[in-house]
Image (cartoon, rainbow, N blue to C red; front, side):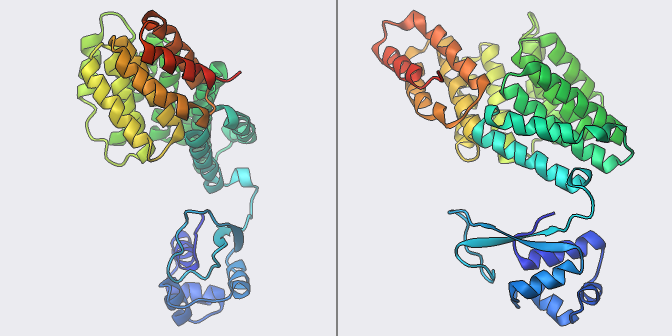
Length: 374
C-alpha cells in the first residue's frame, strides 16, 4: 500500500491495522493531538522525524522524482523537485506479499496501455515466473493477487502476439483464481482467454471461454458486461450468428465503475463487433468515441482504435474517410510498440490496394508505410 503524503500514510496505517488515533499515537510514541493534526494536514514534521516514527509501525519513506505534471498539493512537506511515497517495510519476500503483487499487476497494465505489449513482455514473463510457486500454496489472498498479475501478463503477451504464452498465462490466472475462490478473477481470466481467441479468429473458442465466465456466480456488473461483449465478438466470427451477436451487444447493461481505459476499450470493442456485422454507421460512431476516450488515457488504445477507424472505413468502401484517418494513424503509430497493431497496419495497407487510384489514400498509405517497423 502506497501513500503520497503523510496524512494519507497515517490514515492508511490506521485502516490497515484497525487502529484509532489514540492507538496509533501510542504505537508511534506521540500525542493523539499530533496524530489528529498531522492526519488532517494541519501539522508538518521533518523527514527525519517522520522516518523514525514510521519505522515503529513497519513503514518507511521513499523519495522519488517528481513528474512534470504533478501538482504541488497544499500542505505537502515536499520540495518542488521531489515527492515522498510511504510504503510498508518488507517483513516478507516481495512476491509473497499480495499487495505488492497487485501493485506489480497494476504497473504492468499501465505500461501496456502507455507503450504496447512488446517492450513490457519480458518484464511480465519475469514477474510471472516469480509467482509460479503460489499455485501450490494455501494463501488465498496471494493466489488471487497472482491471478491478477497472470491475467495482465496474458493481455501483454496477446498484444505482443505471443499467443501460446498468452494462453498459458490466462489458464494459469484462471487456476489461481479458482483455487483462491475468486469468481471475478476467474471471469477476468475467461475474458482474457476469449479475447485471445477472438484475435486469432477462433470464434468457437472465444464463445467457450465467454460462456464459461458467464456461468460463474457473484460477478460484478462490469465483469459480466465484458464477458457478454466477448461473446458478441466471438459470435460475430461465426457464420449465421449475427442476430445472436447483436442480442449480446444490446444486453451489455450497466458499465459503471469502469476505469477510463476500460470505458475506451469497451466502446471500441462494441464498434469493432458492429463493423464485423457490417453495421458501419453505428460502428463508425462507436469507434470514434473510443478514439476520443483513448486520447485521454492510453496511447495503445488510441493507436489501436484509430487503426480500426481506418479498417472500418475501408470495409464500408469509404476511401476518403479512410485516407483522413490513415494520415492521423501514421503520426501516432510510432508512439507504441505492439505486434498486434503492426499486423493490423499491414492488413490495412493490403486492403487499401484496390483504391490506389485515389490520390489522398495513396499518399496516406505512403506515410503509413514510412513509419512501419523495419
